[in-house]
Image 1 (spheres, one colour):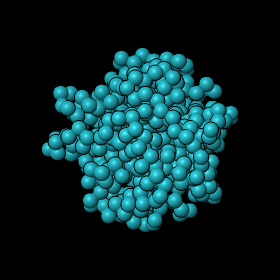
Image 2 (cartoon, rainbow over the protein chains, first blue to last red):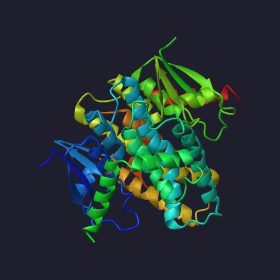
Image 3 (tube, one colour):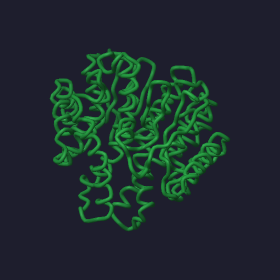
Image 4 (cartoon, rainbow over the protein chains, first blue to last red):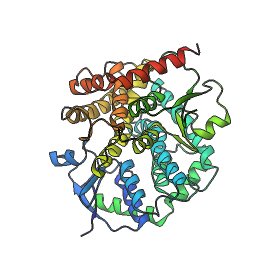
Length: 213
Length: 213
């Protein structure tokens, strides 16, 4: 039995499959070549033990020996500090990875999540709310386009956990056609998701949920 | 001249004053007793130099000697690693602080920001969008209520940068009356914002923007 255990739901409805956040962690573990196993927690009937590991009743969480880590950003930082394949060694590069981990969530996903939730719920494009959040996302994507036009990966030291998180966030926007006007963002998502570790993580997540149908 | 320089806008319109994100960083610097000075970047006419420090053209960023850090979450993590007044020493406590830094942004603010933006823009409460995001925030606040009913601060080791970030996020919800049904959340915000370091940070932000009117 491995020391690293990734916990995700036992099942989710089909629409979010392929976008559930355990994928970010699977991807990082595959990139690092760290052995791990996957455990399940009920999606439909969440127990006190679930909330003890993840206070919001969400997934994923990672158990590493006697330590448990929740929040995908914190898990990716933890794995980045564990594997030199996921974070450069120099202090400046490590600082950049941390900046971009937070930026992927607090600057980009903070704008893309309302937008993708609107897409999921079929919000009409003529409402004030849609226009506001569509403009909000546009501001962020225009800036990411400039950043990503400047290099293969976010940090000069090479592919890192920051790319896993940023590409996963932008991938959800791309799924709903939101990157059409942003060729550098689109190419970045294509580059990141062409990596064998992503494909393995994606296929494993799809198979995990399909097995519970 | 101090080695630590916090950069914020030179001016912002009155409505967001007291909620601008340099406050989180001022608060942490005051708690730690670290000497710093405040620099300004134009709000109205953002220059390439601004985007070089903060890729989204937002603020704050912190200069620490020859290193620059952007994203308020990354800055708070950086300061937590710099001062034992902002993060406990034991590995388990440090892990918890990192989890809650990410949770404050990716779980709580991800739900509270659409809600507060709706309040700012005067979204009507009978729209599908309002109801969806109000329910989304409710789910998060119900869980935070359970967490905060259990202790004075988020991490057993005592007040930390995680509390600065979480209290700052919840404070924005409270400003629009969103914590009325959550007494533990409300008491937590009151407890955090009663700290002298918060008051100093708040007054300094208000004075900084007022000086430019």
